Length: 186
Image 1 (cartoon, rainbow, N blue to C red):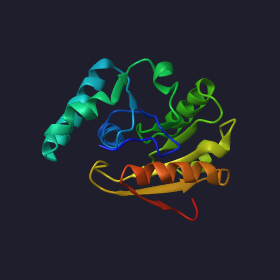
Image 2 (image 1 turned 180 degrees about the vertical axis):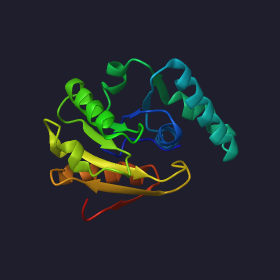
Image 3 (image 1 turned 135 degrees about the vertical axis):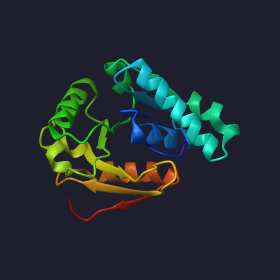
């Protein structure tokens, strides 16, 4: 496992522990990055952690399971989950009104410098940025399934997204051994 002292983003919250969410949390934690994992119930969070352990056994990483799981903090209180992280990544169902409401809710809780990302492959980032008070912090980081195996991550910026935000996210993805591809347009 790597130390995360050479990157700008040192803590992540993954909102949604389902198929993609738990795998993304696992991927960050495997790289030594502390992750808060939020889902709608304690039961879903337990399932997410068990799925991470199962994934790691499948990959033959039994010796890393405890270290990786220690870096993932399951949190069922939403405000607590999104507070204190430098990147909040949404990984919930592909429903635009639900996602928009979620980002508005997140923005009310986190400071303006916190980066917001969606794992969506369905919607363009400007749809999310348009509802935010600080639209330049929003982008898409689209992982492919399974995220802890497939290295490619599409990074999609909106017409507002700051290059500083893009660069910080790309650096984080490279640190976690991903291959980020910044798309030229939405």
